[in-house]
Image (tube, rainbow, N blue to C red):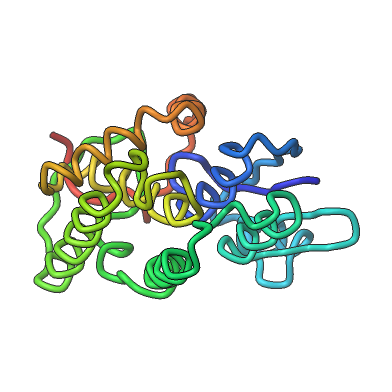
Length: 217
């Protein structure tokens, strides 16, 4: 099984699929592809029809969407353990994962993932509203599941994969959040696979100007 990922400093969608495999210690080959502009579409189309990363290649199967990759891994390799076992919690975890997958456009646009930076940005009202929504979500989930573990639903799940890049974003741009959300960010940032990803990101030297938002602090 092979996972094709983009620059670790910038590629938030790559991180989501990679973290699912890494956390659950599923053996895979990793292939990195530069997201630099020159010839990008042609380079990526050799892996998937969408010319985007990540891409999972498992035998004769190719999956080219982060959430779909996580779902496949959960079903094929984890007997469904990528989601909470309780049906109601599983439904809620899927709902917030899909909310991240299809929403928070202002956060994505104004706070691009940039693991090696510390920046300050001027936020739009829409971005502030989205940050509040994420903070409230994290706070409510941590309060509800504190007794069963440190992750959003107590035990680690695909929901945590989906929000890991947001943790990096909030750290980079010094976004203020609740005490519970800050504790969740600390849990995520200290997680060994996340530390492994960050170490690799810090070793990269390529700069993608379109993802260099804000001013240095």
